Image 1 (cartoon, one colour):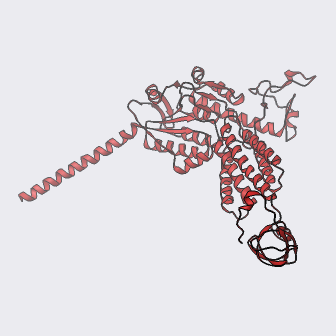
Image 2 (cartoon, one colour; image 1 turned 90 degrees about the vertical axis):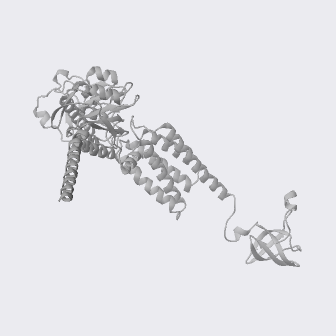
Image 3 (cartoon, one colour; image 1 turned 180 degrees about the vertical axis):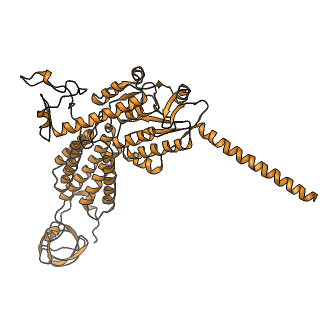
Length: 499
């Protein structure tokens, strides 16, 4: 009985200890999650891989009940759809999201500005800038002029009759004329918008409404946000703070955490006071596939891929059956098309690159002593320079390197062509005429000679001896007419006389 009581006693103590450990673990789990934060990175263009990464991590942080999500931003902008994916994730998050433009010298342009406006806390590092949020059409460069800018009225027209008096778009009274306007244009008293300008004005107005809604939601400067969309205005970090575009300027993450502490923000579930004191921050990285796709979407990588694709395909066409250059060229072409799909590009620049590649291909097939090839290189290089708009421009060093490599490739082609013109025909009677060889056997005026590794029946007007060097004068059926070759200097005299 005593032993049984001891066994029951130890069992009870063990069960109590296990229960206390489990209770402690469950009790501490929410607290640990509540006192942690996550750092995300948006470095480069706003693309589908970047949006997928940020959306996933923001949702995970919200579900885990983390204290804060910080997005470090350095972007020239990107796709509107990807930007909206990120913004929707921020607006739906129960965990406050702070955007931080860093390091010093970074920027948050175009789509980055919208993301900043959607954040619960928006901050910038010193010596950074933001703005320039005018929509850019994929597949074409933006027009030089804003279609909504005021224009001078036509001669004899009173400007006061213009129903759209200001760039802000004062409400216009609808008339019979405006109702009966042609369906492919938008007309007013002093100007007509073409289809392209009408579509662009719709895109600008939609972007203005979107960023103003975000500004009103976060109580930030909506008027300046509109000017960033309509006029591509840009400002520094200090100006952004003065204008109420951002909430604070922080020198680093620690400074940001200190300044955010105690702020009250509105998340999806309601108001929340930030408690960032002693919060443990963890950095969440994108997956390997997301990294690769995001790397491919870089403008410099995009033009390198298109250059490799062009080179590989030209080599395959010039030397059919090589297989490897063609396979590499097609793979690079597919990856390049993906990059151009997610980047704003100028169709004229892409067309110039295509024309340059065709000119280089023409040089390979119909040699023009390099003139067409060099012109093709120049056109291809200019196309690479203008294919992406400002902010996405390809590095000059990348363009120079590609042109040097392509020029070297073109030089090899030219060298091979010149070399191929240096010898006579390769087959037929013309191929063996004027070739040299050695006498193998000889009897009187007839004998056998070795020419180009082949043994031929031959005849000559003069007697020859085995080992003599001969030159083919004519081909008479299957008999070579030869004569003794003259020695040409010291090197010829030193050659062996044996076949």
